[in-house]
Image (cartoon, rainbow, N blue to C red; front, top):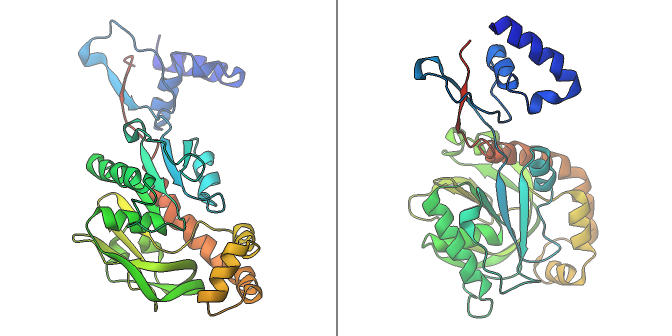
Amino acid sequence: MSAGAQLGVARALWPRGEFLKDKYFPLLYHIAGAPCVATAPARKNAGRDSRRSCDVVTMAKVLVFQHVAAEPLGTLDPMLRARGHRIRYVNFHRDPDVDPDIEKYDALIVLGGPQMPDEGDRHPHLKVEMRCIERALEREIPMLGICLGAQLLAHTLGARVRPMKTWEMGWHDIEPTHFSAADPLFCALVEPQPAFHWHGYTFDLPEGAAHLAHSDACENQAFRYGSAYGLQCHLELDERLINRWLAMPEYVDDLEAHGKSDANTVREETHRLIGQSATLGRALFGQFLRPLGVRRTRHVLPSR
């Protein structure tokens, strides 16, 4: 069958949805110059010189380490789901003895929490997490650590994690470094931008890491090591989650003990600044997620 005839068949099948299982679907995309997004059976007897190949896209499996219910993926969740990725939450607060197999996943995201990286004896799951982080680094899969997750990443890389003289809580600007412009994520941070913070620990920059952002109170706000990113601030939070924190006694107690603003002030600042933070978060996380789900395989197509 000629290429024109095959294209006609594919177009006829398109409205009925049968193209997903039809052998002409990849050819339609090949002719149109677009990548294939589904698999189709290869012609078994096609000669080597008559074969053509295209990329087949499969969705990624993302492992997420969560430490408390109040600190979920936030705005990252709908971004992952919109791309069709599969998410597996491991909530160590509910199941502290779980030992996930990082080999089954294409990316790792480690969220925030009240624990400290050096509390492995008190919270044994932290040692499990750092083993998974180490393996993710060895496999060079995308990894994102937020707040505690960034501290665990830095600690795994041999950097010191230490208490801050003054806690950083509420809204404070983060600023780019001279490495930011060349980074695929932090090139979006071209000037100081407001970000939400809630931490009393910080980390030294790991050896060999690129320093990507800083703030007045915290020199190391973000870094990259290979395909892994550590982010101390909370660009994943939306207004609803922040207001949820401000209604929880344990968070209010922390704010009263260590913050420079009260809950009402933080709530008002959140309403005013969340849009800028969300825009930066979408830009950074969008670039982080870009490689996921594009695991390229070869698919043999019939000759035109």
